[in-house]
Length: 631
Image (cartoon, rainbow, N blue to C red; front, top):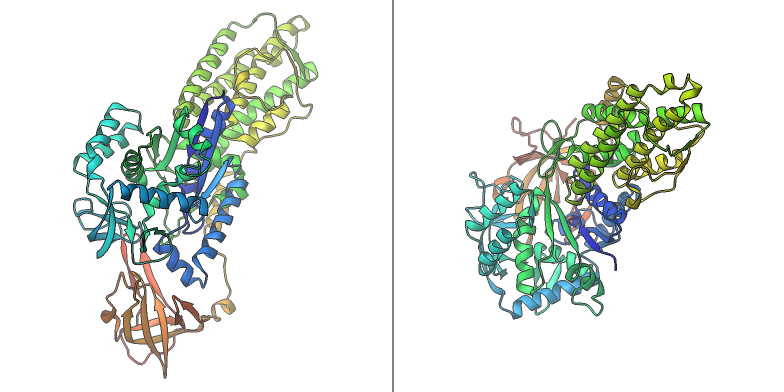
């Protein structure tokens, strides 16, 4: 029987379009899955969407849709993106699916029956953005969320709790007796430090919203995001279902189980998830790899700053494989990497156009020129440097295999590029164009070109998990079908027939010209004055304001615009107590089509401003009370 490999991304929250930071995680898992398939593993690759919670409920209401309609649209968009990016996933799990909901309810009931979930009251700090509760010791010094840095709010709510404290010592023992359980070591040390400070029981239900999985025996409670979301790794395998064959195959009896997450959600996967498994008596078989963030020069990507890069933007201009290689080759495990167009174009030219593309083109051109596209395996070496190149090939393969098997993709690719550079140097050392001048040295020339050919063939095989389209083009150019790692040995090719007219893999880019294009592309689509004039911006005075029942964010405002009073529903509750808005003169989009939000008619939109780690503020007129229109 084949060995098995089960690799998972975190399930992505249905909050908008996927940017290149999310894309890194998915591409990295795809590389890991493709690598293990090439090794002969029976590989299951899972990704999906986390579709429940208050943020989704309110976003759907604001858009005039049901939550299910909203998440259906986002899931369809995300799945299509992954397909376009050649992500070779086997399953796409959604937390709104019946197969998942049934399992989550059974897990909750099981934990409750064991006494590991109990009913209590939560009073403390809550981050709406992260949908997470925090103790005072976990907050930043200024009281903000330790994960996203945004302000938290005080809440008091009846909740069910998971007994984390009961399993604290058992979890510490597991981590310390399995030193490779959490990687890299720096993240492992962070987790150990967090646990040793003392675990408090975790709130695992909410009553303030309805879009989620209800507790079977207490339907006013919705099962909270982390019990819901983390269970996907088992629900996708049919755990606690009539057919649990995948669970038995890939989890209970599987050789490799790997969860890949960003460093911002490591606590949930390294603490809450293994404790859930301990309480369920499910074996902890997985390894956890926590990677860094894809940053911009100015820091984290942010919608408010306007520096988010989306994968389709890069792919449309430079191709899929250029993006895949950059993200995988630039990200060291556990640390951050920076995406900038100048760095991207620099690496595009150096790695793809110069090093790889030039090596392929030069080699195939010489094989065609001197041997009409055909070579034979030489009987022996001729050039004194041949053993050195063969030794570099052998060492590269071993280091590559070890690095990729342990999620050290950057290390493996750096080794591979050393081989590419060594092979380019081999051309300069052997000067085949000089050897070709002597008929008596044809066997030597054949041997030189065969060494180049084999280095290219092995390079293409090792590149396939990372840049599959480019690797497959290389296979066609060198006259082979796609090959797996059974062929990852020097000298396995007995005869060669390459393409007669080799293609240029990657054309060199003009950096200054590309940067000018990208500066323009970073701007939103330009509008003309007629487009702007469609907006009717008015000054409106708030005469009434009250918090919407069962909503953390929404206020119901009565706003007087000239002689008319309108009702507007706005998400200001976290930033403004309702009474503080009364009397303010705010900027309102007055000709926005009315919509119903949670059953309340909203007849306009209030303009606001926000920024990273800055509070949201309404735009208001303060100097004169008689203003009524904005020009």
